Amino acid sequence: MALSNRERVHDAIELLRVGLTPFVERMFQARLGETWPDQFDQSRRFPLKRNPDGSLVWDSQALLKAMADCWRSVFESVLGRTERALVGELSEVRNAFAHEQPFSSDDTLRALDSVKRLLEAVSAKDQADAVDKSRLELQRTVFAEQARQQTRRKSLTVEGTPKAGLQPWRAVITPHPDVSSGRYQQAEFAADLAQVHRGEGSDEYRDPVEFFGRTYLTEGLEHLLKSALLRLSGQGGDPVVELQTNFGGGKTHSMLASYHLFGAGAERALPGVESLMTAVGISKVPKARRAVIVGTALSPVRRKPKRMGRSSAPSGVRWRGNSAGCRPTR
Image 1: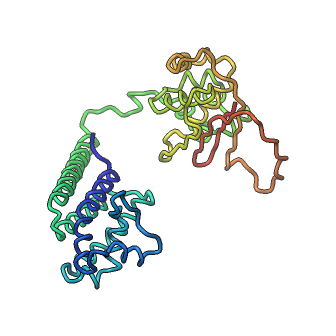
Image 2 (image 1 turned 135 degrees about the vertical axis):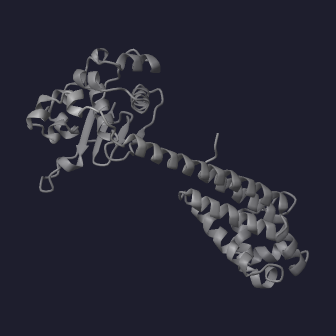
C-alpha cells in the first residue's frame, strides 16, 4: 500500500531525530564539556525529559531548536549557512506536520530533500539514504500520475472528436416530454431537503418508496446508511458524519436518503433497505426523531423559536453538509 505524503513526512522527521541526536550531543560535549546536559537544561524554560540512565530524551523539535539557539557558539564552526537555512526550514516543516497541515507532493518532495541534505551534512548516511529512498519513490509516483493524466487527456481528445456517420443525439434517445416541449424547469428536479420536509416537491424526492426506487445505493451511500443504522441501534457507527464533496457530489441526496430511512415507518417496503438491515444484523430500523435545518430556507427576519429542553436520551448521528443539515436522534 502506497504511503501518504503525511506518512512520508512523519517517517522523515523520525529519521532526522535519529540522525541528528548523536551529532548534536557530540557537538555540545565538545564545546561545553561533560556537564553539558545540565548547562543545556538551565538555558531552557523547561528541562528536557531524561531516560533512567540520565541521558536526555530528544525529539525533532528540541534538536532543531537547540541547533538554532546555539548556532554561533556550538555549530557554526562545522556547518555553514546552507545548513543553518535547512535547520530553519525543517523547523517550519515539523510545525506544519504537528498542526495537521496538508502536504502536497511538491511540499513533501521539498521536505524530504531538505531532511536528506541536513543528514548528509552531519554524516548520518544511513538515515539520509532511507529518506532519499522515500523521496525517489514519491518522485516516481508523481511522474507516473502525470503520465497517466497526459494519456487520459489524449484519450479524451480522441474520443471527443466528432466522427462521420454518427446520428444526432435526438435520433438515438427520446427526451422527456417536458424537455422537448421547452417546459422543463431545472429547479423542480433539484433535490431540496427543506422542500421535502414540508411535504412539497416532486414524488421522486418527496415519496420514500419512489425515492429509494430511483436511487442507486453506491458504496459510499451504503456505508453512510449502515453507519447510521448501527449508531441509532446502539451498536457503534459514527456520531458525526461530515459530507465533503464537490458541487453535485450527492450531499443533499445522502441526507434525503437518511431522512426517508428513519421516517418511513415501513422500511422493508423501501427498495434496498432490507439488504442494509441484513448487512448490519438488525431486524428493524430504530425509531428516530428527525431535525432538519437548511440554511438557505431560513429567514433572517423570522423570530427565533422557543428553545426546547435537552433530552436525556443518548445522542444519535448528525450529518453536516455545505448548506443543509439533517440530524436523526434517538
